[in-house]
Length: 350
Ligand SMILES: Nc1ncnc2c1ncn2[C@@H]1O[C@H](COP(=O)(O)OP(=O)(O)O)[C@@H](O)[C@H]1O
Ligand SMILES: [Mg+2]
Image (cartoon, rainbow, N blue to C red; front, side):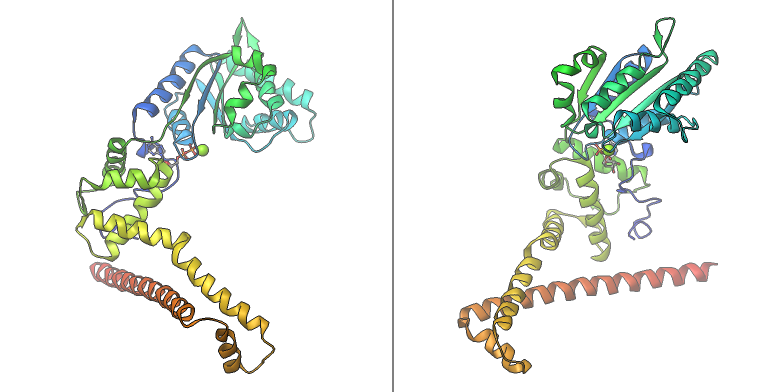
């Protein structure tokens, strides 16, 4: 919506993990270095954990985008797969026809495929995302896959990415053999305020930002506090912030604007909507208790059990919700006006 207005070539805060926007924080760099180290070793498991939205999938995509043709990679994002389903999915991801085959048959075909890669001087990499969903016996199946070997070298290597729940799975006593094969593991953390600053400006610059709107330095501490420094939350917030800046025709984003957007988002999630609902619910509850059918009398009756202060408070809440809705509608109309104006000037150019 706001990209054109600010001269951006792309959506700077889109949620898809696009390598073009990759920002090298210390933790992300470290995770990438571990994965690359793993690749150079050609064996063993690398495990990357981190809270949701901290960039695990993004890191995997960046890594996959940087691979040369000697590595044939497949990525799976798991739900709760049992070992059979895992083998089937892995086979399918490597383009093996698994239709109607038993697990043993699929494993045989997979092995043939891996040997064939080996003869071509290539090897296979399996990236397992959302690995915290895997039951322990399925993680164990992954270890079994690493037993496909040629001259003592594994033919397939796996990287595991998952939320924090992956850690206790790996720490189970029966996972000892798996643990021994882990050659490196790391944990992603949310960004510090300094990194949030770097991250936002980096994404904007990648999208062609020329400094408009400008960003007041103080805002980054506040954004870090509100989002906990989690990239996914930062993207959602920054996207709203830029939409706000566009609708309000801002040339600079200041603390005041951060507060306004936090207020708007907070209210959408809880705040006024809830108090509006509570007000409506209390009127409805009163109405339902009444036997009357005539609508005026119903509402009069509904309000009759309430004190004057209650009524004032409810009306205040309802008015506040209405004001918010009207404000939002005005913004949308302003936006549509702008959009029509820009489309008109575009069609004149043509
Ligand atoms: N280092 C990074 N550089 C650029 N964008 C990132 C980075 N880390 C996370 N993101 C962004 O944050 C969002 C969530 O990242 P994602 O990789 O999906 O997190 P996770 O897989 O850990 O849940 C995505 O929009 C992604 O573009
Ligand atoms: Mg992910």
